Image (cartoon, rainbow, N blue to C red):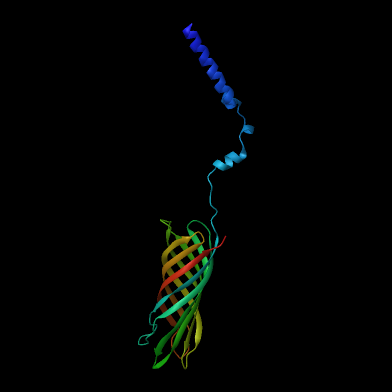
Length: 215
């Protein structure tokens, strides 16, 4: 009799539990797709943040000019620049930059003047991965260079400009990145007049920039 009472109590408790949980009364094979909400599936799916494609950039820096001709000293200069670009994948970026190198004192053939440079470059970069919000990169660019020598008997001219660069980008905020980099820039085949051969002038640039990511 005692065993019968215990068994009856167990059946009663089991029946109450099944009544409280309607899903428990249905076999797994009886649950259809209609019983699952699309909102529930979306809520459980991993959320992928959409990457920003376009960016603007503002740059400044210091230029260590190399002397293009023997015995013609050329001072260092500063630079400012702007650009616009896009991020085409997790590792590839392209941008277009315009830079102006401030006037530097130049002495050639006993004549002194002010030498300045402007460049327009198309650039490609490879981002090498991100660690602790820091992304190292390497890149190269090619375009046009405009050099001007403000001195009697000389003038200005266009030539080829190409560059190789490397640096790191530091994430400051979701839409802001600090760019710290080095760029080697070479001007080639620029005719400044004065009876001199075409100018070939390399320079080393230490640059600091701000990238503004656009939604």
